[in-house]
Length: 253
Image 1 (cartoon, rainbow, N blue to C red):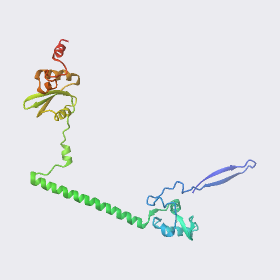
Image 2: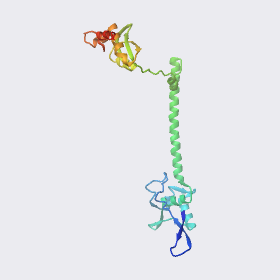
Image 3: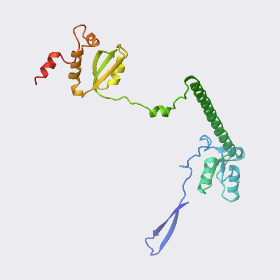
């Protein structure tokens, strides 16, 4: 219980009287509901037989706690319903918390929770057993078929090779012949795109600064005259970013 002392001064008197002012909080206004008590019954008036389904106070059944409060001359608020006393769980919980007593689920609720927890553990163990058997079957098959066990995911990841992201001029090869010359700021991604539409069995590339891509690509196209570059120009010669005469004129500056 909170209180504070205030000093009261009488206008026509020279004495000072100390008045103790008590503030009694309404525990029910901001009382948090224990998660194991359903919200639809927390504020209902319940009979004795119903109270024990939901809560224990200080290790004893709710009805025993209600009776203890009455014996101590500090009964809980109740209402009469059909000739029987009824109490609200919110009032019982508020009183218990005001006296710093434990608020626990009923024995039936605790047992039900334990059963649910055990069932969840059982299901998790069943999944783990199935996974272990599955892995063992695959490892056994791998030993018989390949003479070695499979690598784990972490072992595979540790041997990872990242595709470099670089700009440059690339060459698509068929056998030993260059069939296409191109440029890209992401060479490997661009080559993968070409696999959908062009016939080649290998590639090479030369790293190059972005500002020089057009010049370098054009020089190689005009020099090698690849067949697939010519196709893009509909038989009018090879197709390049810069014409040959433009390239030759650049060397004069």
